[in-house]
Image (cartoon, rainbow, N blue to C red; front, top):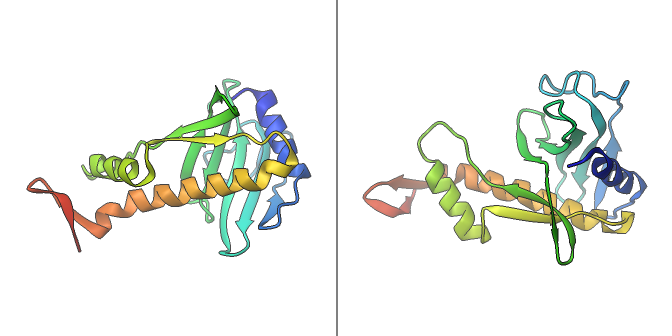
Length: 177
């Protein structure tokens, strides 16, 4: 996404007061997010937030960052403990009802079971491509968060599906463990 789009999104978040989320803005220093994570150190950041869904106390970190230092900004969603990222979103598409962030589920585990994860994601959630409408005002931020949280929860389910089902070549439906 372009820098201006990342700035606009962060401004919408700054101005919003969603009833079902708590937003804590992270401190930046000279346009960076110091001591957040080794992958973010020294990279240009527009803003960062810790967003908590109040009814479940689920939290994610949302960082608007020039991930590869090439003036192409990403919305990176980190887990609550900063141990991993759940989504790195940079692509924006204009659809008939407005601009959308576009994210594609591409599992990269090194256990040979990524095809099963991808198949489960597509079968369960309809597609491996997720489109999240970009809020046009502070009033749409809550819906934006709902969609981001759903994306993360669906990703975690798909990533862990091989722990729930025993997939082997003779039984493509899987057997509940």
